Length: 277
Image (cartoon, rainbow, N blue to C red; front, side):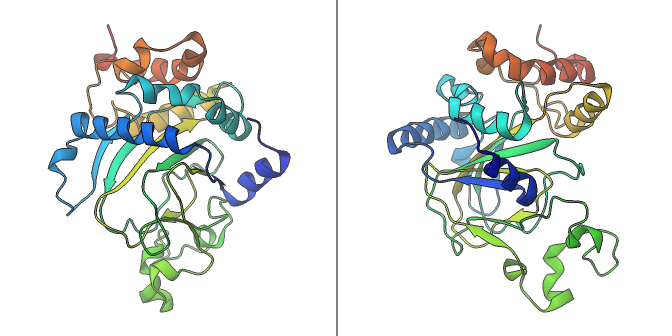
């Protein structure tokens, strides 16, 4: 799979891409089954009580079948188009979501450095918790960033929109609801503002985080900054494999290792006590 110039331009301009029915029904059924096994065994899924989000790290790393998502030619093609060849896989999170998330970005890098791929495993509409995005809000000069949408102009907080503008956060002007069916895929820039509103209390979703490959000292410094916060070491989680859970490493081909090596090396440098021995 190869992104078209128009798709690449769309991503750079609006900060996201949506791929309906990228995975066939039998494929997503298998992925969902493996996700359920993972969150039950590794993510305290059995203890989910619907009052708060249940989350666990490295959701594709605990089952060999899910590990192969990083090898999938569709994922490779999308990430090559957005980030460039030899992109880095940088873990992710698996979830039973409960309630609204509110508006937030996952990063504030001011550049295209990291992205998130999201798999939604339930039918989701604008009224039942689908992903909403504010197109273009990843740009530093977008009005929510440039004007500091906040009473004190000290930070961006779209969740104060009722107080500020008399509109509910879910109705913030310009937002787009990306209604999804299992098998659809969304990728978005970490700096993009996104949210979900409504929905029941056990919405299944998992992500893959990725960064562009480090080709110079500045990139490597940014990757260090990223992994200090967004990694097992940053969350003080022991995986048994350093940056990644062992199944991801034990089943890795040389081609997969291209996408694992930089994050693994930097993670070992930052958190040597967690390195795999």
